[in-house]
Image (tube, rainbow, N blue to C red; front, side, top):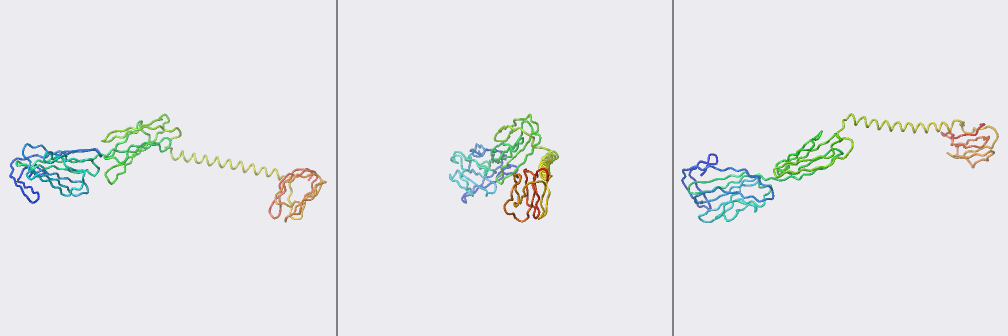
Length: 336
């Protein structure tokens, strides 16, 4: 049999259904090793080595990830085929093994990554051809804006991992990879551009299955990658502006109340305002604004806390119940 390491020919025996064949060999035959890349969902044909002598036995040995070894064999003298641990219906003989011993995978799936060996047994020795099959999965490319001047380019579930580049180059770019259990890889690149002259950017995704370019327009506005100090200054400026506005409003209200109360005298319960001629008012409401006329009459019955005021002449007055903790507001007429 052909030694896997050296390819040297020795004595060999082949067994199929208990029948044994033995040959003595004296000539070495080298092995042929091939690396093959196939795009997923396409068809692949793996060929056995060519021989010019009669083939007694053809055997395919298939070793896939996380699966037991599969063997497919054909014996020419009995025209008999046999399979051991072969459960994938997509891996078959390319045609009748008596006519063509090649192996066909239709269609190729990501689970077909692995090692395939064709062994052809002849009276002169064994001829071997080994394949390392790599299944390629094209990534799904997407491009979108994260913020005004930050773009995100993704190459999702590619095998092997894709390469991402930008035109023009970004001022701040971060590339991340996420590996999945089936051997695929998602690559994400995030870039930002501070220069306002850059209005359109292009993301280029390079992969063994083909290249793709996507472009997007950046929105105008402030750059998204500001320094922390600048962001803090903006926050402080907004807060300070809001504080000043509140102070102005409070000051306006305060001075307005001072103006309204500058001529008012507050009295405890039982006291009254006096001055000049005019009617006497009995104020009975918690808060009231009255248009007073000369010699006005008493108001209706009061609540607790009565305040009396002598009004010399008519005028606008706002009087608030003084009892137990309120004050009088308004402008009394002159002469009080």
